[in-house]
Amino acid sequence: MSEARDTSTKPKPGPFDIPLDRYDMLRSDMFENDRHVGFFERLRKEDPVHLQKNHEFAGSFWNVTRYKDIMEVDTHHDIYSSNGSITAADQDEEFTLPMFIAMDPPKHDQQRKDVSPVVAPTNLATMESEIRHRAVTILDGLPRNEEFNWVDQVSVELTTQMLATLFDFPFEDRSKLKRWSDVATADIEAGDIVDSEDQRRAELGECLAYFMDLWNQRVNEPPRGDLISMLAHGASTRDMDPMEYLGNLILLIVGGNDTTRNSITGGVWFLNQNPGEYQKLRDNPGLIPNMVPEIIRYQTPLAYMRRTALQDAILGGKQIKAGDKLLMWYVSGNRDSEVIERADEFLIDRAKARQHLSFGFGIHRCMGNRLAEMQLKILWEEISKRFKTIETVGEPVWVKSSFVKGYTQLPVILREK
Image 1 (cartoon, rainbow, N blue to C red):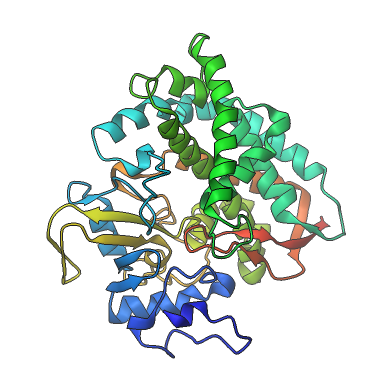
Image 2: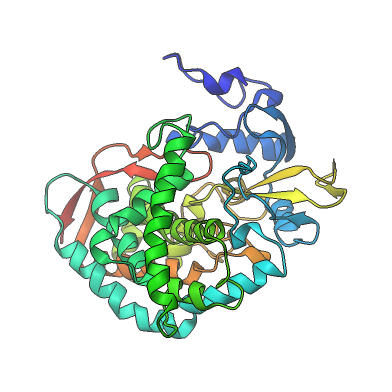
């Protein structure tokens, strides 16, 4: 594993410079400059269900890298369980956060059912005009012809406003939601967000205290259409202990924030990297509904999800034993050219653009996928009305994480029509 911790200034070894048994797919810089692409390409070709042994913090686990094998795992929850953890490392027994994405039926189904009305079609239709109004306000307030950070001023702002609405969270404190999302998913070894598990726990404790006040308000009021009220009054969630409440809050905060936020930034970056596609968009803004799922595929905001085998099974010709951990690398399956034609290319007019893995499949398919798509669609419609180009003027700064594939900075300049 020493290759994963090399901090020298020498060129980093590439995917064909080291043997497969030295691969570390959990290194925090894996996604910088698309470094991951070559590693996953080699795994798909040579060892698509690859056993990574004795990782320093995650133990041994299978890297599942092909589209069809990921689908096999994701759609068979009776064989491959989500219970306990959806990330490579097991949860700390002293600080366990149960959440419905890390549960199996029937409890998963019951808790998901209690909160899913927030993204029901009727609710989405009601939210559309509000999302458009907010997108317009944000875009009209941006500087013209001068450099700024797209991540902070657009991606973060739009998604935290949406989260505040879903929770009916005090609007003036919405920046706390972004912070708690970052803290929950931070790579401790990277040290750029939190320095220790103690700091993470302390900040998440502050999150719980804040949301307990909101719970106590909502539980004494008639049921309403926000997520906290739904949790407080839901048949399967109203008796949750505080740690389970916190776990579900973190799930909803990260799911409603990180994924859309990083796809908003990714779209700008991809269009600038592919000027021919940007010209297609300028020539035909009607491509936006098709471009949105292509952005989500190419970004893959959450790189993987974990499952644990409940029984012995065969996957991709490999013998999986009961108790084995498997990481479904959505970020790899979305580049599998055996299923997705020209998978390494960003094509905004791609046929069957929604044939991607970014939202998962089966019972754990992302609850808010239509809301995420709607936010991106509305934002790009309003961008296309105002600007000839969102021009990137520097490289992005990537999140240091093997789980969240995202950005902290993207310097841009707006060029008006």
